[in-house]
Amino acid sequence: MPARGRARTSVVGLMAVALAASAFTAPAQARSDSTDHHPDHTAHRGTQQAMEAIVRNGIPGVTAQALTEDGVWKATAGVGNLKTGAPRKADDRFRVASITKTFVATVMLQLEAEGRLDLDDTVDTWLPGVVRGQGHDGRKITVRQLLNHTSGVFDFINDPAYAAKYLEPGFYQNRFKTRTPQVAVDAAMSNPPTSAPGTEYAYSNTNYVLAALIMEKATGSTYEREVRDRIIKPLKLRATVMPGNSSLMPRPSSRAYSKLTRDPAATKIYDITLQNASQTWAEGDIISSAGDLNRFFSALMKGRLLSPRQLKAMRTVSPGSDYGLGLERLTSSCGKTLWGHGGSWVGSLSYAVATEDGRHAFAFNLNGDWSSAGMLETMEAEFCGTPRADRQGTEQGSANGSGTGSATGTPSPNDTTSEGISEGITGISQRLHPVTARR
Image (cartoon, rainbow, N blue to C red; front, side, top):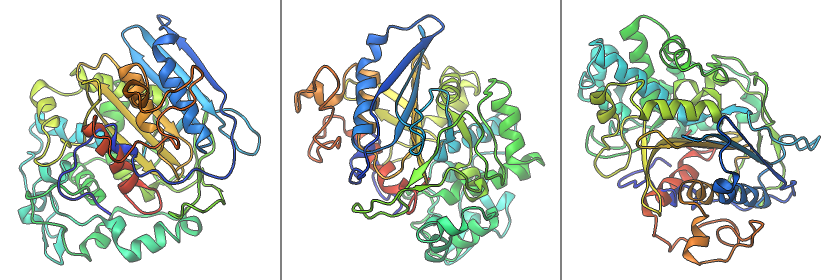
């Protein structure tokens, strides 16, 4: 279901609705490495322990990288291939899903700075007659409202007919089919809006399909080319790919796994590594690595991609939420403000964030989509030094990382010490679970 009303984003909320752990057991051996200025491994010890806990909870494997002023730290846990037992790799590429939205919003803000569009333009200015039906009216919706999810436009993934074909139960049979942006827009327009424009935050993938269509009208180019020329090439993001309608996954990469159901009792696991990327287009199609995501978010926060005015606009959250323009604000339990985005799609759960000054960035990916348990602890450990549950004394983790978080790796629903991060993590689990929700 789309997020409605107040949606505070905290590292605690992101994962609170974790599904039950899987029945299989994957090796939990973790590996870490560092490059450049040789960061101190002990500074990331809690992060590595939290990653191991994710694997113990049933996810096949985790890959992560941190970028700080001291250099790059890399780590993995678990396996990248359940058949062969091959470990995950620190430089794995994966489908970043909704993290794509930050790339889209960045380009839109660049276009505004160039005078090629205005965030307060109506959707109808660029896409006349496209947003119509069941109460939708593009003459009353602005580009800004698309980017901060206050447009009220229905999220197409919640359309029953669309979901039956492209999500549960039809995803596996239809995963190689090409989906056009118009299919997504048509599905959205066949349902009433969630609210009047500008009155309420409600996450909708349709917003970013429309934003990319506007980008193409404003530039006369493609969404893929604009992102590539404006972000990927200048930042030398060599692991980042705009896949178009390809079903391939470039190497290095691990396998991606899903149970293709919300049923927590399900045990069958599907290898869904190969799938047509057009089914997630500008709302979530980019393939990247943890290292590239760190370079992107660090550069973004340091002002290398946007002017101070545009960056301020991007970090201006909509009322009743912690969502700006393609960017989520999270607050750790140790008081650090982070900016980034989460992403979930079939076979992939990810998060990428950076501090406000861009000096510390962290990105990680799970290659199984059925549980987000432990993602909270991983982020908290990276930015606060130890897993959150350990600091609060709610559970004593051993030196080898056991006991990180609650018994199942899921934060207590009554624990609100890190309200902002907590609700954000809940949002990923609820809205992004691959066969049912947001990307």
